[in-house]
Amino acid sequence: MQQQHPLAETGEPTVTDTAALSERSADVIVVGAGPAGSTTAYYLAKAGLDVLLLEKTAFPREKVCGDGLTPRATKQLVSMGIDISEEAGWLRNKGLRIISGGMRLQMDWPDLAAYPNYGLVRKREDFDELLAQQAVKAGARLYERCNVGAPVLEERTGRITGVQAKLGEEKTPVTFHAPLVVAADGNSTRLSLAMGLHRREDRPMGVAVRTYFTSPRHEDDYLESWLELWDRRGAQPRQLPGYGWIFGLGDGTSNVGLGILNSSSAFRELDWREVLKAWVASMPEDWGYTPENMTQPIRGAALPMAFNRQPHYTRGLLLVGDAGGLVNPFNGEGIAYAMESGQLAADVITQAHARATAGQRELALQNYPRILKDTYGGYYTLGRAFVKLIGNPKVLQMCTQRGLTHPMLMKFALKLLANLTDPTGGDAMDRVINGLTKITPSA
Image (cartoon, rainbow, N blue to C red; front, top):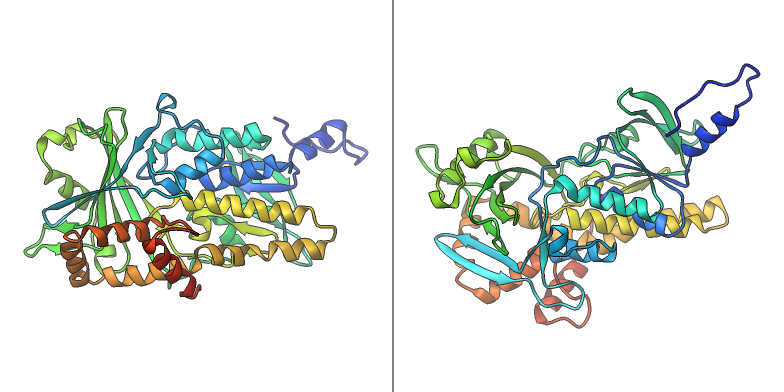
């Protein structure tokens, strides 16, 4: 990998300078090699564009995640040509098991034309690396240990034309150049903030906390969701606005965690690591979720939901995944939407790249936020209403207690909460959900 070199005494670039400059210039820069960034880079490279994929850490690396993938994410992996066989280290799941109020309901993923009828489980420790390597195979140029700082802006227009970064263990200052930059740098998204794009406070926010245990339940072929989450440490137990999960990983361990919404005062009051410890302590001892079986410390991460940072395109910068608040407010799922938004952004950029003039290219790029709103806007608005509703403990308790006694209602809820419907030719439930999302305004 070339590093920066000083100019020759004449002031003219040397051959080495020219090569280094070429290495650090591209059609598109993608900042962040998580699922959103790697998917974006994959589709851009596949379309023939020169792409720089800049990742601040080195692979393999850990991310806080439930490690469970629904059929939406599975579809994206198949589209990218990822080997999702059991031999390649994936564990398939058949559906969702819901536990609440002493009841237990097991539901298979729906049979749909648009999505496979199974999900997957894999640790994020190497999941992201698989996607990044797939982007490299397609032609993207990956820089690891590349910590991106400030954007490079055109003085007259304020348009982004590159990024400044510190490269390698030596933290060598470098500048990368491209007419378009994709922010795939997660919830913190320093690049978006530097471009003046701040989080919308009127959008829901969640937190996920998780750890791993060695457990005999590691080969469970259903994702398990506990809809009643109680804090029993005070004089009066109270139900919390969130859910617990148990996902077997097939490798001798289970991923156990909590997803919590910011729709109640408990969100900031409680130490969620302690809540997780108290929750697993109430489980049967033979499941193995005991302190001595914990293989990693409890870690947490934010879940930015429902377009909580906008606009998704401005002055040469496109937002994908968590940087644009693409997490599903109904269920906290982020990977599927990160990958889908990456594919949508790549398609828009590819079309814009083929336009003859700057004005035509800009017209194509400005369509990206509209595409996102057409795709998710109505659904996310419904999700925001759902978050407010279940923020009321009485409403949440009524839903969990009564819902599980009606399997047909729960089947509808599974399709709605997991966003799994056939867009055309589906059943009556699909038509109702699709109709609702179409008539609900986006914001």
